[in-house]
Image 1 (cartoon, helix red, strand yellow):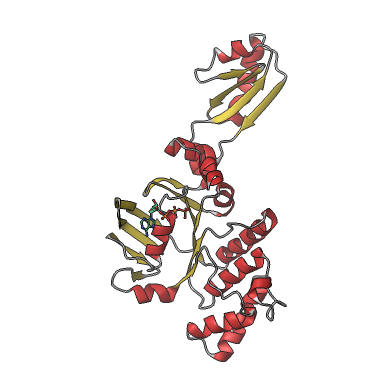
Image 2 (image 1 turned 180 degrees about the vertical axis):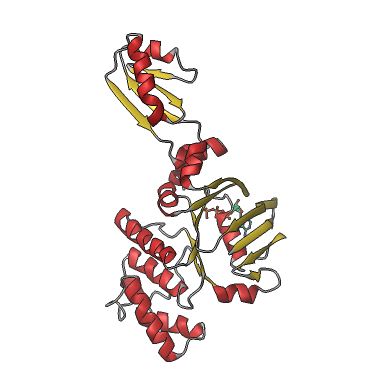
Length: 310
Ligand SMILES: Nc1ncnc2c1ncn2[C@@H]1O[C@H](COP(=O)(O)OP(=O)(O)OP(=O)(O)O)[C@@H](O)[C@H]1O
C-alpha cells in the first residue's frame, strides 16, 4: 500500500540546510496498521506530508495506494484519507453541514453523501450531534469527526497525524477503539505518534524514526524482544552476593536488579540456584522491556523525556 524508497526532504533555512528526512525506505502492506514513532522533530510530519502529496520530496520516490507520488499525485490524493494534527473543520459550522460540504467536495452525489454521512455518524458515535456547531463538541468528538471527514470518500489508506494529542485518557482510549475498528474494516492505517502507549496498543508494526532516519522496525513485541532481556528485581538482605553473579547488576539497599533473557522461563532455575547458595529472598519481580526501553536502546535517549518536554 506504501512503498517508499530513498524518500528525503531538505529544507533550506537562513541558518543553512535542514535534512528533516534523510532517505527513508519502508513498505506498508494492505490492511496493516503501522505506527510511525519518534520524538519531536524526528521527521514524522515531514514524511507524512510527503506521502500525502502536501510536500514535494527533494529526493527519492514512493508509490502510495497504487499511484506514483511524483508522477500521479492526484491519483494518490483520490485514494487516501488524511487527518492532520489540527482539525480541518470550520469550528462555527454545524457537524452535518461540514460533512456534507466535504462529501460534495469529494464528488459524492447529494443522495450518496446523505447515506455515507449517516453511516459515518453512526460508526464514529456522532449520531444525534448533526445540528451542533463543531466548536461545541468535546475534544474526542472533534477528533472522531476529523476522522469521519477523512473517510467520506472510502479511502483504502488513511493517514493520521498524532491522532490523540490533547485528549484526556478516556477519550484517547475511545479514539483508539475507533481506529482499531477502521483496521478491522480493512482500511490500511499509517499513524504518527510520539506516545509509546498509543504505538503499543494500536500498531501491528512500528517504524521508529529519529533525526530523519529509520532506526528500528518491527511489531511492538519484536522490538521489545530486541532489548537485551527482561529486568529482574530481587529483594534480599544478601543483595551484594546476588549482584556479584551478574555483570550488569545494580544494587540499591536490599534490592538488586539485572537483565536476563526470557526472564519468565529462566526465573525458576535462577531462584533454585540462589536458594542452593543460601540466598534468602523477600520479593521477586520480572519486568518485560517497554517501548521506552526500546527507544532508549536504539537512540540513547528516552522518548518519554522528549514527550514530556514537548
Ligand atoms: N518548513 C520547514 N522549514 C525548516 N525546517 C523545517 C520545516 N519543517 C520541519 N522542519 C524541521 O525538520 C525537522 C523534522 O520536523 P518534523 O515536523 O517532520 O518532525 P516531527 O517528527 O513531525 O515532530 P513533531 O512530533 O514535533 O511534529 C525538524 O528539525 C524541523 O524543525
